[in-house]
Amino acid sequence: MPAVTPATKETYTIGWSVYNAAYEFFMSMQEGVLARAAELGINVSTHDQRGSTAEMIMGVTNLIRQDIDALVISPINPTAIPLIVDMTKEAGIPVVVVDIGTGGADVNAFIISDSYAGGLLAGEYALELISEHSLTSTNVAIIKLEEISTYARRRGEGFKRVMTDSKYEVVAEITANADTTQAYEAMKNILASHSDDLAVVFCENDRMALGAAQAIDEAGKKGQIMVIGFDGDPTAVAAIKDGLMQGTVAQQPLEMGALGVEIANDLLTGAPIIFDDVEAKELYVEIYLIDETGEARRY
Image (cartoon, rainbow, N blue to C red; front, side):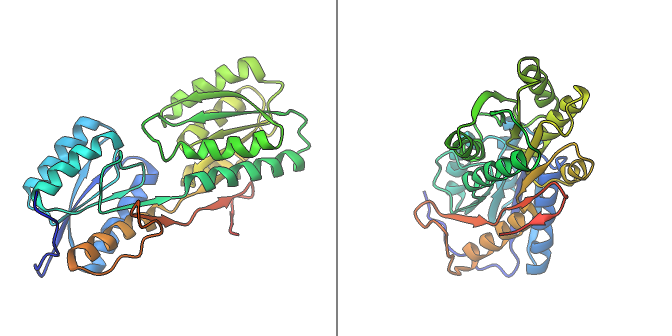
């Protein structure tokens, strides 16, 4: 397979394949991609995976046929990235993965938040909430993302470590596949067994946290069971201000998308890239807490 070499064209075109542009998080990420590309004078061919692995593969295949110079992708299914990398390497196209995961593929760069550290932050904040609200239960629950989201699932691992180290018991870990409705049903199932003895539920993304918060509110437990999400979506921040959620660990999807374009441009022009993890080719974007005031709390 030919190696990726710096291009010599005056104007580059990147292919941008997004997980699902209808979701707030990825909508913001796409805004970052398009804005930074415009600043750099880079053309963008955009493809929406719409949450489908088949659509992701087909869309990337079409982008490659359009003679793009680089691919920036936030994949619905990281396990399909090795196949995509095989196709892009054959075409001499560098690949930058933004969030979700690489499936172990040898990509040119991987841009991600530190999910495990975010989980630790959520756990530390949960302990703070338990103290401030004088909660007596020593039980917590986790609503998890789909199994293929290996990096994002580190959020729950970090949260679980803090809570178990502090002698709390994780009484339920249920997968809701990043979906609000599934998380709503999962939370109802948790409440069926633990409605009177549960302190905190941590959800590995905000869409699931909104579903859990709805179930808790309908059960008359609003403000009695703390809900913490992850992402910092605007609807989650609004829910926090309404008292339905108590916090979220915020990512910066706008900056992640913009950085994806910057790194693609560096790869095309031969500019040096400073990785946070050179071996894994990872670059980290800062996370921060939005607490129950609905305001950012930076450390």
